[in-house]
Image: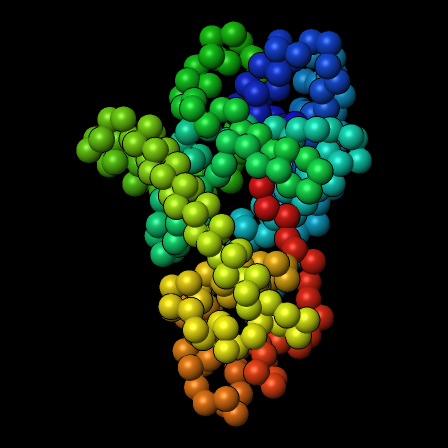
Length: 301
């Protein structure tokens, strides 16, 4: 399981040790090296695990960032890629993450503020299979406050990451400024926002299933058959394009999909000027094709 040394992952690790005393448990600590205290965090993780009799693996993660990339997002992708790789190599059936109800609410609000659709507003699933490993979030029904209170009452040490107070990160501002206002308006905000995320997850699954069926009708060796694609109503066409790009390992924004749909309405001889994650999409003999080498799909948890 992922173990940062913070309150959430500490509570999860201790709960796992109590629930499954006879099963092998690995604490996976990702060392980004993004702040001066990163080495001290790794030392804390090792010491705590030694005290609890848990094997600790410290994983080095290199954050690759291009112009315009969010450091927070790229760090998350690098962290999750390392966690998944380590879980596979260790033969783990499950990788547990310490996300709680507050994290779920923040993720939903972040998605709402960037104009996400149902898939983004679904926030984080309780369980999902990623390659050969199941990823689980057993604490999504717990508040951050309750987890910290339990640890404090038991005298269990945990880390407080100074980056969690950095106002430059949007998630931190949502936590410090927006959630207190929401809490005054709706005391049960954790359950309410969690329920909204669950409903969006249901809608996203339905859209995904429909898009998969439509994609089968449009897909061919060169790419997507434009005649079949353009016969679909606009909303279904957008979902097919999004599903196709994801299948190729390309993450697209709503703005890119809208732009691509507009250009597909142009006369057949018109060029398509859309590039997504370094891959260029072109129109060729009645097909929508991907012209350049594609990146491997980024890890998502």
